[in-house]
Image 1 (cartoon, rainbow, N blue to C red):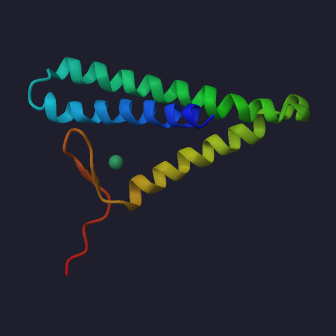
Image 2: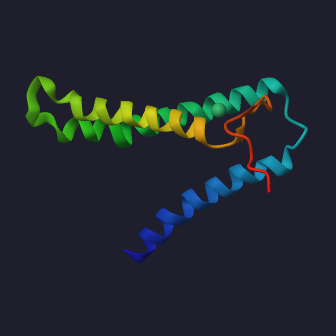
Length: 108
Ligand SMILES: [Zn+2]
């Protein structure tokens, strides 16, 4: 049991750490096309993970609502989109094309 927990924590940890470490290994060596491909791959993984780990269970857990069973998941999905749009507006940040967005950093 403890071995399963340790393995379940270590495998994602190592995968995430090794993936993030590629930033240092491949810095300035990766072509724009490869960067776009890897960014698209990461986006695909995130969309698949959000559907099969979050949206599908949300839909299945409200099956008792009949034809309206999609409403809780759809409302939560739209609230999540709105929350990210809100964060995009209120937090200073920079996009990959180095375009700066959000409020100005407060001056001291
Ligand atoms: Zn933004």
